[in-house]
Amino acid sequence: MNTIFSILLITSSVYPQVHFDEFFYEKTLRMDYFHTGNNKEDTYSFDELIEEPYWGGSKENLIDIFNYGKYKVELYDEISGKLIYSSTYSTLFNEWQTTKEAKQTTKSFSETVVFPYPKKPVMIEFYSRNKENELIKKFEYKIDPENYFIKTERSEKYNSFEVVNSGESSAKVDIVIIPDGYTVDEMDKFKEDCNRFAGYLFGSSPFKENKDKFNIWGIDAPSEDSGTDIPAEDVWNNTVVSSRFYTFDLERYLMTRANKELRTLASYAPYDQIYILVNSQKYGGGSIYNHYSVCISDNNNSEFVFVHEFGHGFASLGDEYYTSDVAYNDFYSAEVEPLDPNLTTLVDFDSKWKYMVEEATPIPTPDTEEYADKVGAFEGGGYVAEGVYRPFADCTMKSNSIDNFCPVCTRAIQQMIDFYTE
Image (cartoon, rainbow, N blue to C red; front, side, top):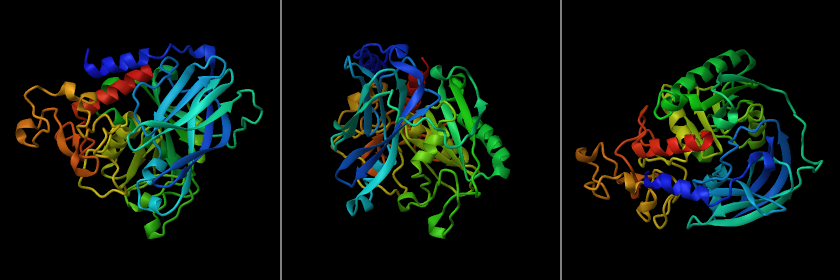
């Protein structure tokens, strides 16, 4: 048994087994909140609770074992004090905190966490990481599942459709694809695009070997206008989740701030991951771990973008490139180990993929032909040329390449698939 998987098993055994039917109903309770701050601090404030009809997550693995992401939420049974659910994630707000704008002003972002609908009162706790990546408790809120202020209304009715159906959602990875910028007349195109992009995902390892562990759903939600927003070109379109290029003033960064609209659309299918498919030929996309992913529909590089971004959103893989412009400043500290499973500062390399490195391979590893097919620690990654190291000379997380996840990224993806489905 390899070192990392042993660690995961040990971590999972720290917490008592949570029996789903003892604590939860088979539906979702969604909590919307506001995340407010600047480049130095953040605060949380409650918005609302919403009942949703499906629970797409695992009924067996209810406690996070990976410890990825900038944030963590924990759910405790009020009477026993037992931890019954936890999840880690990142958000657009966290990325914004590293921009120049965050040094000059304070902003609020709408965010959401979802969890199985509790049968009894619970306490939910929110944690943010400090500069040392330590989790600091920031907010808590008591939830009474019988509270009549929990919203049950469905503002609009949308239909979901199957793209790939491999079985019961609680034992599969469920991806819901949200259309943005597809008009009523273009919804047939959206359905065709969903099938095409499912083919893109299962064209890359390790997804192709695990196709039977995935369900993919589409939501029939047309937009008033076709396309998306391109602010620098004064192009503005009325679309269902208001995606736009130039997020953080970076042309290719295509994201949305319409959190509530996005989550409402996603709730019409069981889901673990949200993917927004934007009806555009312009190159762009983006993704944030356990938040959402975005890809354009009709660019020559759409297949690469779709799979690359899903690596971020699903397995918390970091970008391994360092030559392209980004909006962030000092995204990774040289003093601490990155949270991403495929990046290291060598501060604590033992906690990463050191066990996968052959004894004769030097660390750091020269980026030469001799080590082109070896797992090592190659300098350059995480948007910087020095101080951050990637595990392989090349990878889908580094270059515009298809079916090219390195062994470390492949392992991280496989572990996440197993967590959702075993």
